[in-house]
Image 1 (cartoon, helix red, strand yellow):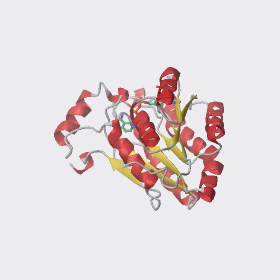
Image 2: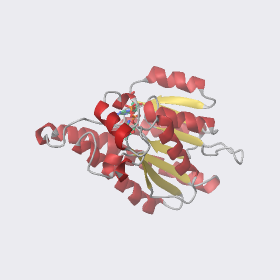
Image 3: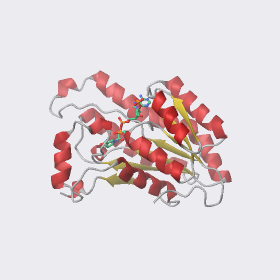
Length: 253
Ligand SMILES: NC(=O)c1ccc[n+]([C@@H]2O[C@H](COP(=O)([O-])OP(=O)(O)OC[C@H]3O[C@@H](n4cnc5c(N)ncnc54)[C@H](OP(=O)(O)O)[C@@H]3O)[C@@H](O)[C@H]2O)c1
């Protein structure tokens, strides 16, 4: 199911952060197929971003390091300037660190700060910067929509490391808080994936075996599985504050 941006022949614009790779690339492609004009973004993979933009019908690429406040401001300004509007913001870019949960000394303050800045502070700041444009979407077209990509690690005591899991739990709670603050003009939801086959998890063989043997769906997710969940939330005019756990049912076992 892909969100229908062209049902009324009105242009809709989506910014997908971290969209040169993995889950973000699948979301950007799904939104482009559904008729959205897409703003692609990444930290350093600019050549990939520009090549993807060239393949899509209406797309541009903007480079920005989300750890830097000035880059976040420039990203939102450039995204809105391209078509003069913004309807959808997908906060997908995120970083992870693998640290055993019982190895407390390796989870240094620097690790906490780095993960918190990119996985929590940056999504909040981008939403704040995009708020006027998303409210304008509600006035002229349809409620603005934000989808945050968190993690099952933010819902259950699991994940690559405690700082990572806590950053995603914070993102989930922020999602609910902002759904209250920004409705009805802006809906705010999250998708919380389990294991997804992306460059980030290519070497996570133990987790891959766990999903193959324990998850009711007997496999990890593809990026397209997650893109479908994101599209469903974007297209559901009455859903806000939802954290959609997309883990193939692993949490049930
Ligand atoms: N894969 C999984 O199993 C899984 C599970 C649960 C949740 N998630 C979440 O899903 C999201 C996407 O994960 P993925 O596996 O698709 O990751 P990925 O393949 O590593 O791609 C990450 C994307 O985010 C960008 N990015 C990272 N740090 C950035 C920064 N400081 N500023 C700007 N862009 C930055 C990267 O740009 P560059 O390549 O240019 O650096 C890249 O485009 C993340 O939030 C992750 O935590 C993933």
